[in-house]
Image (tube, rainbow, N blue to C red; front, side, top):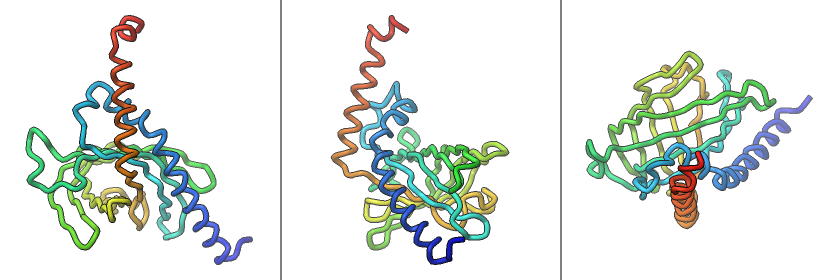
Length: 206
């Protein structure tokens, strides 16, 4: 049986692996995001997206879950005045969740973001609002969320524990914000894919 020290060391090493894998997730993210926004990706210039790479605790506060997926938003480096009815604040996320032993694989989606407040301190900006999140029982609406952006390199999602029945544990769901050059490259790739998908040849062959 592993000692507490060995277990913690294993978790730390595994967390580092997940972060590294997050970089790989960035490479495959365009396929998933382009599917979600395939017909109007050109209308989403200025958006930022990246991977979810996180370890979540169980209800006893012990590491138990691996989270991987992706997020997309237009709120980073913006103010409340940047948004209006025709250009609302948006944040969406698609998450796969599985136990450390590989069991209980399932999915969650976060959507319908409604922004209520933006605050900044040092190199951290907090975006508060509500979202709809899918759980086993079905979609749960108006779930309070705080989205923190740290130094424009990391993102943390804190969901209301009461509304989600503490499903995501007592720590934020973490993700990575890719370098701007990578985002531009991926947006270019998605723009080309969208044009290919909408070309007359592909339309007639469908």
